[in-house]
Length: 138
Image (cartoon, rainbow, N blue to C red; front, top):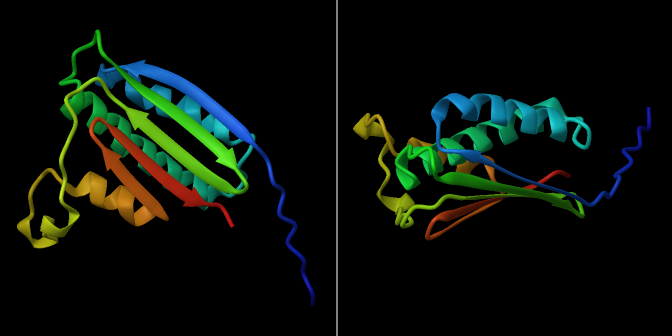
């Protein structure tokens, strides 16, 4: 049986922001995923995206904005040529994270989120108070 997969190239941009109140973040991410459901049909990819969004947005609210409700975490998602870019920016001072220093056997309760995002991304960039995850969709 010969099956042919048709790749549809679509350009899409989504911008939004959420205050750094952890109670609002879950519903914000759920709404964002529901919006992306219109342009991405692969449920496994959507699950990866939800994990990436959760880790980056919660990190921005907790560590960047220190849960100050008057500060926001900004989100920009672009889809161009089957490459999804997720950019999350908080109002904090920025982070310095060395992936080489992470040891999974330390059993710390922190530090795994960015490692997880890096593993789910084809490219992952951290610049000051901005994290960018790039995921190829095909």
